[in-house]
Image (tube, rainbow, N blue to C red; front, side, top):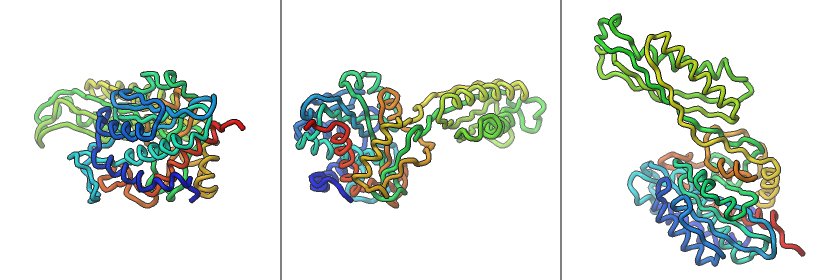
Length: 388
């Protein structure tokens, strides 16, 4: 694995940083301890500018290269998840009910490794903006940082990010041009009928029957309304109603997720979902209210940047270790907001056969950190070479 030698020398440091961060997982925008640790390391490395408190606990650090040139952005997420850890490692979470179950501790360590190397060597033109972002899991920290003007404030011309990938070949890079992760929206349906004794259903207006019919009807959007070539998931994940066996309840509640890759399919879903809810309310004699919570938009890689990132990954992983045309993933990611604001690409770095993300036994593989850090470093050096 042709990792940059100087970064390979930092392997133990990156593992130590990552394992410390693993002990202190924080949620949402409240990444105070994590941000303080990151800022302390960046000061030690001698970055030229350190901007804290963006999106509450986010950080942007600037490293100046040699000579004039644009600014390239590299992003790592910092937050954890509200999951009780079951890894049994010596450096397990000390924050009860929270853990780094998605590897953001590793992403942060990789970007710190790249930061240390880039601050030492400065073998690039222009500037690099190191973006340490809170609230990827929930809270949309990427959107908040964009809304607070990081792209304009730091004149970022393009932006890149890596996510670890359990189940993918160790050290392999995986990406694609176009949509790589889905939009994630949430639907809520509240049904109101007329409750009463279950032995006298004719005296009631049963919301349970309406709820069951609605779940089935919503699946026809996928099977009968959208083009079969357009990817779409609609999953009803909750039905809450009733309290006992002999009472027909007054109300029922449905909830679920919608995953799409295009605004056209998303708009179709919302239109048909409202029509189905309204039609079923009339058909079953109930009232029904549909509410949509719009989540992260699709993560869409820009074609030129995705191709360039794959070329750089070839240097680090070798051609056999790069898949430049993976299938899209139905999960969601708030790096999408940064890719809406600037050209760039998102890649997945294989960490071998480990527990999956968002699992209580998940743990980031420290052995991929030098690979990811080397990719970040070479990306900057290739994108913004020093003039001869």
